[in-house]
Image (cartoon, rainbow, N blue to C red):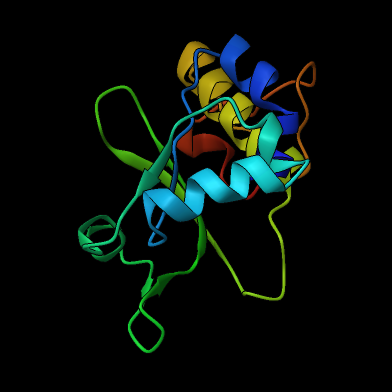
Length: 136
């Protein structure tokens, strides 16, 4: 959550909203943001999913522990899930990859092109045309 806060301004410049959702209580969120120096920098909403309805709906609930998995879900303006990353508990998110994926999705929708592996903004995309399959 704190790592995402570090790129929050970049995501906002892409008209992207962020919500942090966990099965922790609102009281836990309050204490966490007051005690943790990095969490105190979080300026986006922290949502408590004590009922686990959200975690179940997005299929990110660890049924054994009752806690959400470390997941990032990207939803487009029409409400469609366009990307979903689930990290093992031992591995934190790659915030730069999250940002790159949002940029790539927006690039693709703006240009009609796909983005290749390791694409970064400023690089060309790939023309989506069946005649190029296997030739590029």
